[in-house]
Length: 96
Image (cartoon, rainbow, N blue to C red; front, side):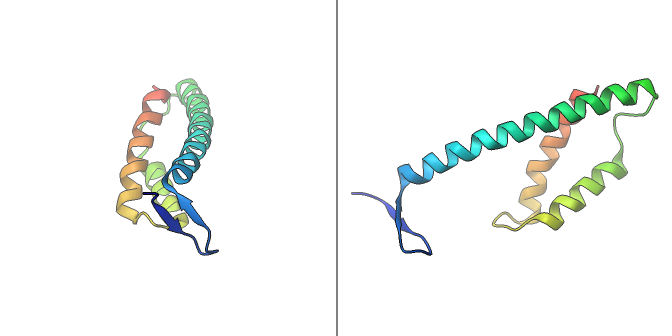
């Protein structure tokens, strides 16, 4: 039995269609995370040159605040922060 979900336009999407959409989105997410990592690496190099600390709590809080302000859902802010805390942790390790 096919599992279809109705969209607002009335078109049914099968699970396979949703999974294909997720696969496409995953590629885009990986590309964006890679670009973010490149920027973090460059910032890390500049911090080393200027003896700035890698961990900057005020800057991280500003990032979290901006991300929450941009959150359209369906994730609530706590769920989104869980994801972003991990992203920030990884980016901080790249800066070291």
